[in-house]
Length: 235
Image (tube, rainbow, N blue to C red):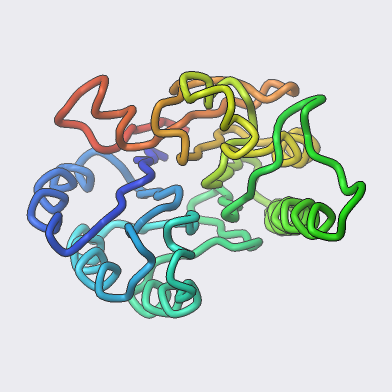
């Protein structure tokens, strides 16, 4: 299977023509399109509607997770309903299998990496914050546990490893993702992990267990090649 992956489109109606042109070749180059969050800029339905027009015209199976920008206006459930109605597969603690390849994903959350992971100690607000991170981790666990396919793809918005966020300011590393996600990935196994969010991070890394992780933020892809808005993986 050829999988085209991208993230952080931050789509607005004004970017319709440009994005349509940039994605026009994807159907010839891939069997599935994966979008790892921040599909919209402010999480508004009037941003999602023209984006769906682009995606539907591709006539390509599309798998997505939401990102933090898609939550900005509190209309994430409406955005999900719009995508599902258009035939887009939205992963949020769920699994999806196609042609022998399983996809599992969720938005993920922040919290830090390794010894720097924030723990649920102290104020109630800290415990609530950590709980949100754990809840997203459990969503990924649930999605992976549903898969029966031998080949597995994990889609998250926030990074599961520190390596692919390096390049961002060190002060914001804890807000780029959490290694709690990597723990779940290594427990279940994955052939490919894609994420976004870290616009200035690195493109490749590995979990402690050796799963290949790729940051497919569109800004990084275009820094390598201005004409490319997705990366194709052979699985």
